[in-house]
Image (cartoon, rainbow, N blue to C red; front, side, top):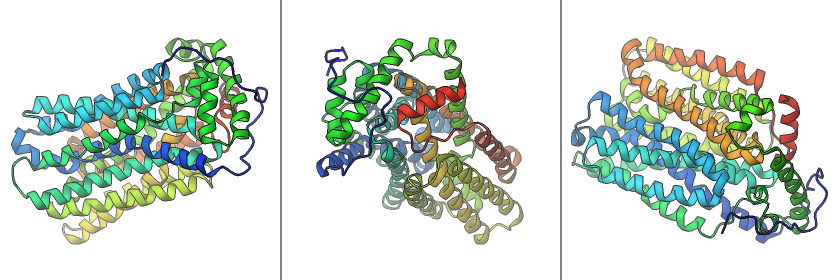
Length: 482
């Protein structure tokens, strides 16, 4: 598939400004095609989750093999996050220029190469480099897959379909936690057991690459390139004929207007005040998702549970509970997104995580060391993840895929994701030092303060996005932030 504008003649469609009507019964083959596209694309989310979660259990076993010090241990963990920051920016730009599908294919290759490099790493330096490459793929997937799903989904199903990616992320983390525990029990203390934990990630990378070879390009990206006939062909795969024609008129009109406005890069952010204001909202959403401290539990969950009173093997097994509740909560989140507004759902999640962190700090400070404290902390980490993965994470990734204009959607989300991953990096790098310096209770009290700030930001600045097509939403946000 080329990127040139070789099919600019659009089929008959309603005039610009017409809203696509609801389907009068979605044909079964169309619904099935949409499910297949969603299922294949979200393997990128599965890889995202597995590669960020696997280090939780693999790190203790690679310490002796690679001779890790506390500093290099943090470097191995956080190098993926720095790569993800770069991957978010590069992936967003590449996705806007070359297409969502082409970018996901490239990311599948990077996932495979990075996972294999980590598995075979003979030294700490090689592991850091391989984790950095893997991070580029993770960051690129965090941007490109939600945008691809948002642009191919009908408006009324966009929330559920985009958050399937979040479901696959937490499923990948659960797979990592479970496989870590099983491999550790089978392999015991044998050298190189961590390599088996890491190599599993190569399998879904192959599935993603093979699957995306036969998937269509985003219809909105095609329209933005002036390829209206190709866009219509894709819409007919995932809409009824009537709905496809109606939606194409809306997409085509906005694509032509965006072409005249030349929206899409840093120059446009500097020249367009409403885009700059919207970008700051995206940055705020990204920071708020991370300052809950969610990835301290995802990366250091085993260590937190060990400090709370679990034995090492028991902590690995108990950590599976965190993965299970994340998956179950995401199912609930997908169900809620079709029934409640995004903004109050986000605020509820922020309040829930803040209370859970407050209680973790109090329990760690007041309860005597032993089984009681261990299970109390585990109960609160599970509660925390229920609110985080059931509300905050799905709403954040969904909103970031919705709020930016079509021609800079992946670019805008990429910039926001850079901020998200850098915040993630800073927290992940600082967490062990904070725990060592001020104790685990005081560390979680710091996150409580961050949580209160996140609630205030959401209440003041975050717009509601539910129930609008992407084109309607763009016009509303243009008016609001003008």
